[in-house]
Length: 463
Image (cartoon, rainbow, N blue to C red; front, side, top):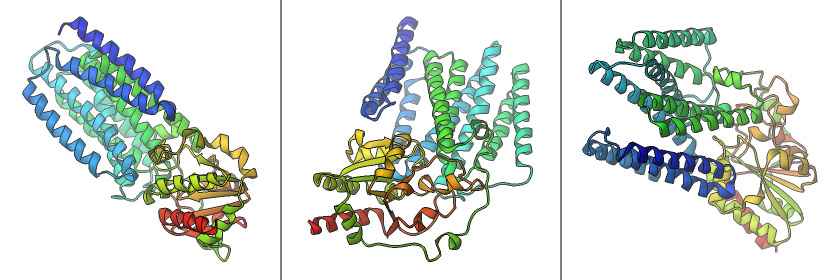
């Protein structure tokens, strides 16, 4: 395949990537955007495989089979609730691949005594630093989300100073690698130091802030890929990596705004500083009112406007299809039902949108936080299904709270709030929620899916 055709194929692939990203900006066009992106990747892969400098096809097929089997097993085994962990792993694999490819390219040129340009060595150093931070940071995020380690903040004295020293050391090693690239050991020392930095940057971040971290690591994986594109002089890798890096940092900025966090704090691993926490006994003692499905059904019978706020608990219970059935039943009786989607509900950006789309809930029913909040005062019943921190009013009222200042969905302003939850256990932020003890709140304790199915049965019996 001639270089002209290869470059033309890369251009076509890049255009498809851009249209794919455009499609992913709205739920209605997301599937088409995903297909366009996949088609672009297929064009890029085929063009690359047909290039003359590619290694033998035997090795490529072996890698394809191993990677394909691994991916197929993951796709079959993984639960929807574990998608955030899977995304974290994908980010990490991208960073790890960048480290290995850049390192192999450096070794190859040094062994063959070829000239090493400044562009090559700078890009190699960037791949090693960013890729290693991404890989190990993503593994820590995976371990926290998978509960292999504590999801709480892990903080020790002098942590930020140590991070700064390690970061400076990594940058110093980058400079030495550019100065003396034939010293290939420097690259692997750089990777080792950056690996420690990646771990230390993520361990102080609590589970409540993990959606932001995942978005940031996604951006890092794109930047590492773009740097590797310069190492290989591969234009489509540069473009695709840049698109992922740029879109990831934009998403991180959006997530930061949604959580009232500083982007600078995210970049340097100082998210979510712990504040004073009220005890659950002080917040809940004697004030929590529980209700049965039949009692909640009586409320819903007379409701004209119902807002459902989904959260991670809905994902765990796999209750999205039951929720859709409840929506259909209520709307068949003339009740208007809408869904309030907080930007960080669940454990990753867009988590709730994906689950509700899986259950064929119409896109126009999904309302973003800023859109739904003004109407909550006119809402008859707000149903909170497995959400916690994103509806916690202390974000507005307690400046010492770990979630102080975080914009929330104001369900406490609805006429009646029904919280479906297994227990009064706290969310990722680890703090009690005064909403559960509010005068206008009823707790419907139980598994999310079972509780919604009981609500549906009670409504039908009452008809």
